[in-house]
Image 1 (cartoon, rainbow, N blue to C red):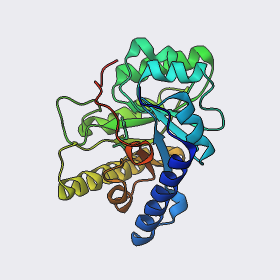
Image 2: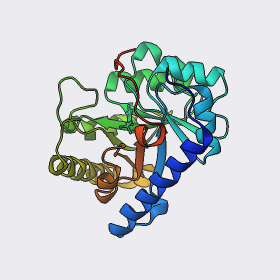
Image 3: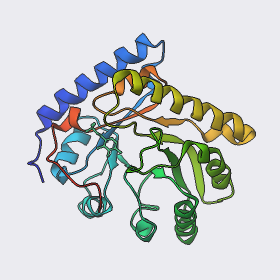
Image 4: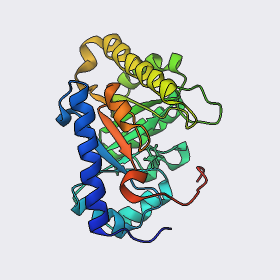
Length: 243
Ligand SMILES: *Cc1c(COP(=O)(O)O)cnc(C)c1O
């Protein structure tokens, strides 16, 4: 685990990221207020998270169930919301459902059913996004884009889920041009989902795309939510996505 990052360094980074977000929004003719910053806090300490919240972070994005559980026990997120943004196994939904404000990474009917079941048990409504594997990468989570609209219809059949939109992570190796195309395609899928769901569309307001390397491009492409880690907390030690 990296050392705790100081309030001062995080506050300076938050200001810089927000300024870049504002410029990207204005260049695209969009209202900067329409784009939310989620701090991706994987591998960070509870005190780093507290410093980030002091520095104005309002949503923390957590990747790994184990870290989520530890930070919740620590009350590290006090004053902010929490989104789960990592791969979720059905046998771990009990650690996540009802404990986070949104699960951004629903990518199968099977997982959705498990989340619905746990939300019903707790008698809560769980906000979710559908994660699309926009680059069709074999190694990555996320549903195939051709499955997204069927998953959206399935979500409407789940009384304890509130579908809020789509999340995507383009391939790490994409060039800027490829990234731009992936963002455009994700945006189109978001619009298709809204059109497809007709009268049920009022909650569908989240398009979560853009990370440290590409959030200005994602904002130009219509993102309403960027998930930023490195640009706020510095480079992370290498880690393995499973677990
Ligand atoms: C780590 C992570 C991010 C942030 O990545 P950075 O490149 O460090 O900004 C965003 N989304 C998800 C799902 C992540 O796991």
